[in-house]
Image (spheres, rainbow, N blue to C red):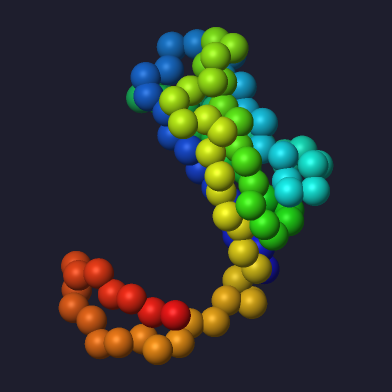
Length: 98
């Protein structure tokens, strides 16, 4: 099973039409997405990656890339993820594993 979905939330948003989102898969195929207002002055973009790998996500507002764009999102096949050497840990404390 691939990563179920990704979400990015923006604030404040006054003109939803000014947002542009381009999340191509590593193979260059565009990934479908949904852009919507959240009703509190913010916008949310939802998408479901279709391929494992590093995805570059491009986001523009009024034709200008937002700070940090493009973003790199790593998508994994959850059935292939293996965790080992888990050490005892404490709640709200960092824990390392391989």
